[in-house]
Length: 110
Image 1 (cartoon, rainbow, N blue to C red):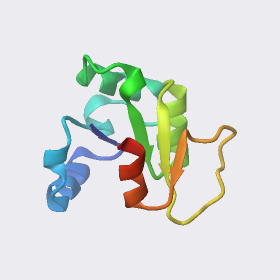
Image 2: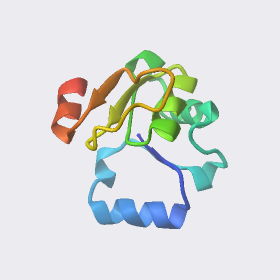
Image 3: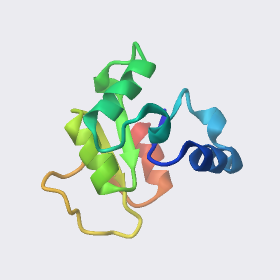
């Protein structure tokens, strides 16, 4: 699933223009559900859409440590921080994985 904060018109237009929409089972935009990352309810809502996928099989991949990685932590999910700029982790807890390239994400998810 792709989950994103923002206005539905903007985010859906971006996704359509990217050519990536077909790769996701579900696309969930905060504006459409009234929740925003890092609220764990956003992540729980997403899990419900992916049912019967157990939480142990879910990996939150994101480039924002506060909304994506902290949000995943808040929901009890494994996380992968896409950090090509090699920034220092600003969070108290490290992500499950930290990658610097899209190729590394492929290696993580196998």
